Image (cartoon, rainbow, N blue to C red; front, top):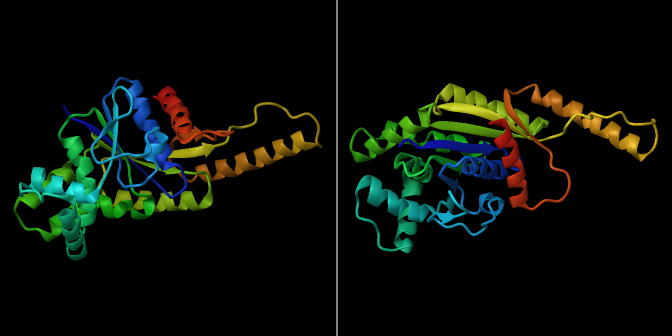
Length: 281
């Protein structure tokens, strides 16, 4: 069984955790067995799945969906034991100290341990789909390039073998997709453009797609009169919609997710966005 991987990134504040949760929920609705992983401990993935206290060990979130977060010390223990074959440290305390030492002396260790956990879940084939709420676009490059950085430093041996299969999974277009979430606004669009250019130049990821979040719908009804609060609201909506369309024209947007009016909990937002993903598939 070959698992697939969706890495969800985006500038801070664009809703990447909500979109990552929506991808996981939509896949579960299709009957897939899904693991959702928060790559950065303390992110918003758990809240959007209705389970704010995620742990390193996956927790069930309804039938067919489990979720976890990456604790780097525990990931190091697993990495040393399962992937490298080195006997694990007995407790988290020594592992955390060892990790800090490694991270301060060896380039890309912090990142390779983190993304290595995600890729290990893909490699072992337990899940149909692994969805990772990944680092934001300002940091995602260091994680995507971590395995290559280690390979450039290590001439041979077991660690080299490990980073080679990591690169193979990441670069396989049939297995790995990087989803860049953006808002139809200047700063998120510019940062997304820069990330696309970097990803295409480095050729580290199998496939890439862009999802625009919080997109206003066009006005589909004529507003009576030219004055009054209704007319003013319609004029503002039209102006904002036109500005959003202008910025969306800068990007190869694969999917536009709606602006959700009203008050919603994070879990409700994810469910609503999953509805759109489900309809678009």
